[in-house]
Length: 128
Image 1 (cartoon, rainbow, N blue to C red):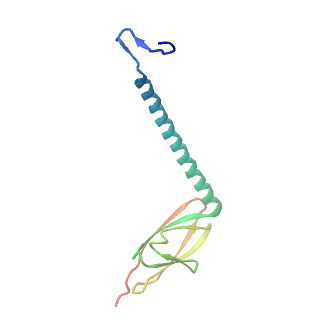
Image 2: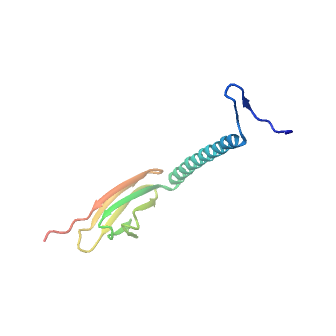
Image 3: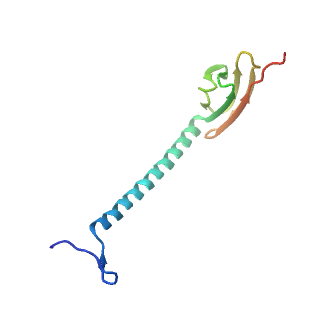
């Protein structure tokens, strides 16, 4: 066989076959792809934080009942289910949660650029 070189271990009486060598190459390729995906994910996270810092921050809303209406600075933003994560400009915002049969709730939140603010609200029924 011309041009074919097999690494042979004289002590063990074994050599590395083509399959052994290609297994190492495949493992190396998988490891390299995984590292590249991790770097990509880190880059995406950095880009998202930079974008949020430029335009504002995020408000994460947890509201019960979920079908309550959410208003931000007087503008309707959808049901609590739909408006569970909102991108808002930096500064103070008025959050109003409304649902018939429950007390309306008003809150003010300060949004910091590049950060996420969490707000948990459970509407109460009025006493009869």
